[in-house]
Image 1 (tube, rainbow, N blue to C red):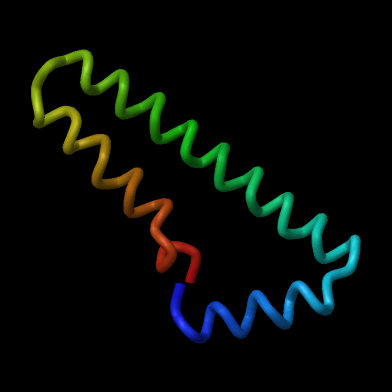
Image 2 (image 1 turned 90 degrees about the horizontal axis):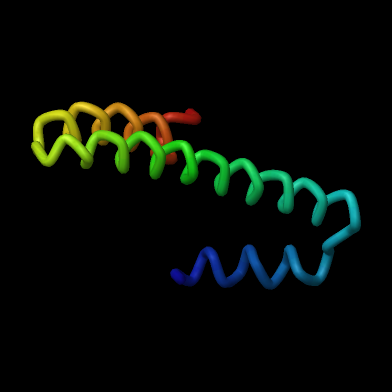
Length: 71
């Protein structure tokens, strides 16, 4: 964790409210769901035992879930 993240988490912990913690929890749940979606698609593609289908699935999914995709 970098210095900026350390400062942010320190301030966030000191100022946390139930509503803010609920928003963080919802965001974590969404991340878990996104990862589950990725795992299902990649696992299915890997059953083909061929890197081409796996790459065809992995690249769009990884790009869709990358931090910049939300920007």
